[in-house]
Image 1 (cartoon, rainbow, N blue to C red):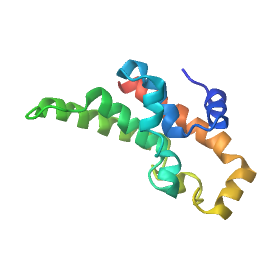
Image 2: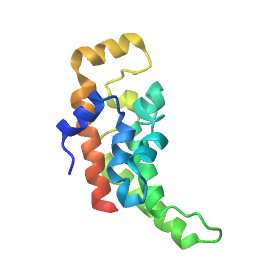
Image 3: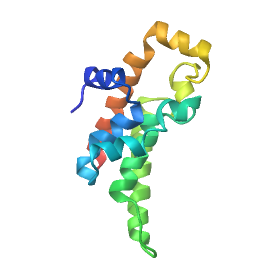
Length: 144
């Protein structure tokens, strides 16, 4: 299991929440670490505009990579994927009141320089966000 300190260390190296989540599961999903980080590189900070949390989006990528349907006429596979998606969303909602980055960060938006200053002053991205990533990884480990 990854710790909040390990996540914070990865953030300090320049990786985003989405990259940490997908990279954590890469080997189990048949991906190398470089590919995992590249496919999830554009999703941190709610796609860098405060939208859906990058770690949350990454969790959906992980579920899709594990259970997603890719062949035509496979409703059972599709239904299993949807069931895992719904299970993840329910478990996440038990811990957090929103999946929107801006809401999770107390109304602050990473793409707004003034908000980013406040987040930096409060060290939110190195405290709250690592715990959120750990929460998501724990949920995924439970349901995958």
